[in-house]
Length: 221
Image 1: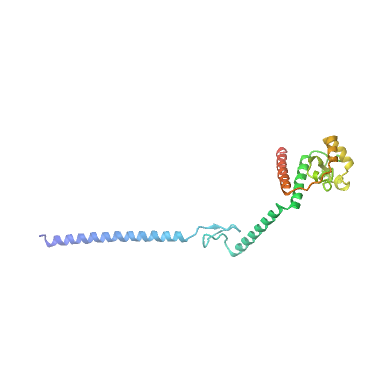
Image 2: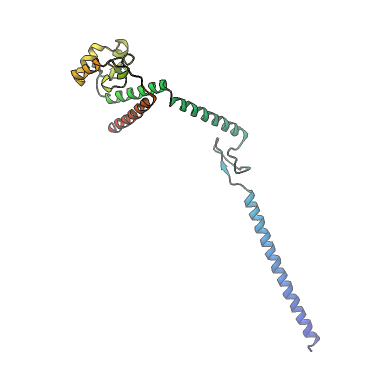
């Protein structure tokens, strides 16, 4: 049998060990609780976003919010409506023959002006910067629709000859013979065909001459 003093010492040691274990468990619970709070905070706080309209930074209420205010929300709705409207216009233009005919003519005429930019007016030989220069047709495009986009039928011409002298065709013919030869001019003059251009043909012309313009721009530096 041990002495009463020894029992008291053992009892005291057991109590100290027990208290130490309890303190360690309390610490673990506290750390776990703090981690849980941190995780919860991180889960609820959203990352700042950039407003689609005004480009300012803002704190979103949820992940789907893309604008910072009601004012920007209304602007975003208007923007979407405009985009939808523009899409409809684009879809219409892509299949509207009248629009494509005008667009094709603009592109081809631009190409001709670039092709002949260092050449004189086909009719009067004018060189200078006091007049505008057009892409003038030798045989009018209205009555000769098959030649509307024929490069041999379209040449650089000053605004005086094209607009005020009705094409100045006598001098145009002289200049054209010098440029492409009598045989080619005769072939143009004998061609009286009319043509109804299809949507697909006009799209192809637009695409072709856009590429030709790029090539000329590249060569001209």
